[in-house]
Length: 450
Image (cartoon, rainbow, N blue to C red; front, side, top):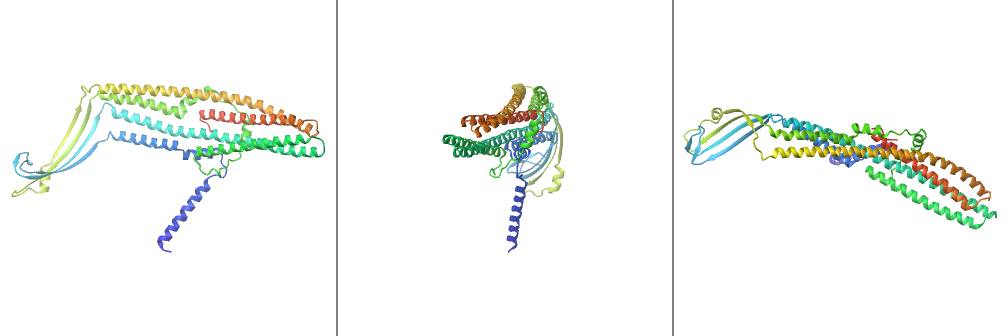
């Protein structure tokens, strides 16, 4: 094997090993925090926010550097034929070639605080961009948590539907025995079989809903290997969370915290301050600007058909010229452009203020909605759990009566249906309560993982 082929094979082996290691880093069973972390790392919204942050940081750097001197150099070459200006600034009738060299530096001294306020505005925009990243990550986390809980809810529905189906299979078998013993009619057997097939259809629909919810979760995470995606069993943690009781956060406490800490509101507040600094940037156009400039220039002149030309180095020395100066620019009349710019920036600041107020109201409404939905789910969960327990006991009695031949298939099915419906309602209330609680935790800046 040649050296080239050896290197290529080695590179391929390393690539496969790296890919294998990356694959091993993915969890075999996904918990909520792992789903959130993966989604945040692969979220386009988060990546866009990070790029906007880099843009804001670059803008700040540009504005900071505008306070430093600017330096430039120049080189020129001119050929003149006929009358031309010589090195002593006298016009002569002599063709010549001239080479010029120069260096200039300039520095703003006073710009009506324009640069200072531009830097202040850029710093505020940079802080807002950082808050945007946090807000994007929080939005991803909240959406993933909601979908994760939806998957858990669908899993519980599948479990209930499967138990219902298995229960109906047992009933069909027991009815078949009763028919053989002559204790019930054959029509009972056919009714139970029909009911079993209906429960089988319900189970299939529940499994399809579960599969679709898993697909939705993977798509939200930008995770492509749906077939291998398996959620961890967190039923114990969910049950423990419900059993220990949920202390609901009051809307006023959550809102008070959000006003100062919610990343979206922080970003809007910072951009409002930035807009107010932009007004001062525009107002700087009313003031004079003072700048300092310095320069050095020299040149070389070559006369054609002349008996002699001064040496190159000697001419550069003799023709050197230094310059230092101050420049004051005083605005007198600028067609009212500065006044109109100030008006525009004031309008922009007012719009930012209204945007902030609107977002604050939206956050408060979301917190209120989450709180009262959580409270309703809490009450519903308590009622449905009691209903579920009562339905289970009633079904056990009806089951015993049916097996003893003192009850009908209809009564048996109705008792089971009431129990299963109570189970489903309890599951719905449970996950609704957890979701709304997590939303309140989100507005309080708390961890929303299970």
